[in-house]
Image (tube, rainbow over all chains, first blue to last red):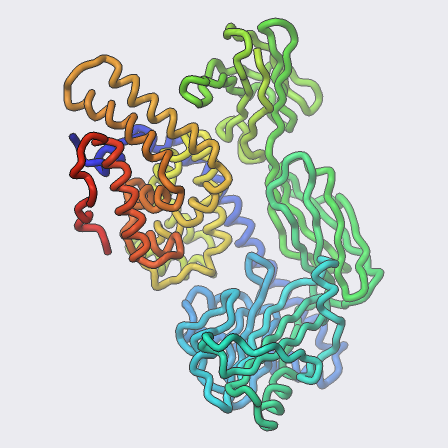
Length: 420
Length: 195
C-alpha cells in the first residue's frame, strides 16, 4: 500500500501541465495589464511635470514655497524611505501627498496612490522602525517602542467620490489642526499600545479624504507634545492637482460598473467626462459624464459596456489614471425542438468561434464535453449556431465559451443549464 | 540575464518601478500555480484563475515583502482566495478524480497500479470529507509543495497549527485507506520539507 501522501501527490498528475494556448493567453492578459501600468507611470510623471510648470506663475509666494518644500520633503522622505522600505516601493513617481520636511522629524511616504487608490505617510519625532512599511496597518513596531515624549502621525489619503464614505470626512482647509481631531478611547489593557493616547482627524481636502491618526507616547500628552503634533499636522500636504477615478467592480457581466472619483478643486458643479477605450481600439471616446458634489467627489454608472474597456476621467485639461474593466462574455442556450438547440454568444468578433456543449454526468457529479459547435451565423453583435445532441431525456446540458475562444477582449462564460 | 538570476523578492521590488520585469515572475511560477489550481478545480476554471492570480499579484506587487525570496507561497495565497468562490467546482473535480480511479480499478486486477487506483478512489472520498481548513493545509503541502512555514504564511496561522492540521488530515486519509487497521492512530512526521 502506497503512502497516502504519495497517492495524493500522484492524483490528477496528468492535469498539472498547462497547454501552450492557455499559457500564451494568460501571458497576454498580464502583458495588457503591465502595459496599462507602464502608461500610468509615464503619464503621471508627465502630468506632474506639466502641473508644476503650468501652475507656478499663478501661485502665491507662500504656496510656491510650500510646493518647493514639498518636493524637497518628498526627496527627503524617499531618501529615508529608501533606507527603510524595499527599494522597489521607494521608486514610485511622486505626485503630492505627505509631510513637508521639518528638522527632527522622520518621514516615510508613498507619494502617490497605490493600486487600491490610497497613499500613505508616516511622520514621527523618533526613528521609524525598519519593520514598518506603508501597508494598511499603523506602524506597530514604532508605536510599541514610542517613548513618552514621542509623537507619530499615520495619514492615509484616498480620492473622494463615494458619497457614503465622504460623509465621514468633513471638508476642511489646510493647515489641519489638532483641535479638530477626536480623542479615541484607550486600547484594552492587554494591548502593547495601552500606554499610548490616540487621536483621529478626518478631513476632506482638495478632492481627497485624509484619515490622520495621531499617537502620543503617554496617556496624557504634555503640552509640548500636543504642540509638536499640531505643528506637524500643519505640514501635511495634499498637493495633487488632478482628477481621480475609481471603478467598481472591475470585472462585469451584464451590468456595467459604477465609476466615481474626485477633482482636486473640491468644488461642486464641475463637469467631468468619462472616456472609454474599447479592447482592440487605440483611441478614447466620451461615453458619459458626471457633475461634482460639494468636496469635489463625483459618481456615475457606465451602463453601456459591451467589451473589455479601459476607462478614464477627464476634467478641464487633466486626465485621470486609466482603469481596465474586464467584461465577461454572455453565452445563452435554448431549445428549438426535440433534440435540437440553439446557442448564441453576444459580443464583438465572436463569429466562427467555438462553443463547447457539456452534459452533466450525475454518476460522476461532473460536467463532460459532448460536442463543440462553431458559431456560423452572425446577427449584428450576436453569433449563433444550431446543433443536435442525442442524449437521454432529462439530461442537463450547458454551453461553455472558454477563454481560448473568447480572446483577450472577453472573459470566459458559461450559460444557464437546460434539460434535454 | 541578471534578472533571471535574481530572487523573487528582488524581482518584485524592481517591478514596482519597472512593470515589465514582472513577467519573470510569471515565467517562473505560472506552471506551479496552474498545476495546483487545475487539480483542484479542473483545467477550464484553472485557466481563468491562474491568469487572474498573476494579474492580482501584479496589481499588489508593491505589497510583496521583498525579503521573501520565493514568491510561490504568496501567489498560491492569492490563488487560494480565488478558489473560495469555486467550492462547487472543486467538489465536482474531486468526484471526477475519484471516478478516474474507480474506472482504473474496475478491471479487477491485482497489479500495484490497479491497487493504487482503488486506493485513489477511497482517498478522494476521504479528501472530500476533510474539514476544509485541514484540506487546504494538506493540499498546499502536497500539491503546492510548500513548506510548513510557507503554508503558515499563506493561511495566516502558526506553524504549530499547520502541523496539527496536516497530522489530523493525514490520519483521516490513512484511516480511509486502511479501515480495518487498528494500529493507524498516529502518523509519523513528514520529514525533510518541514521548514
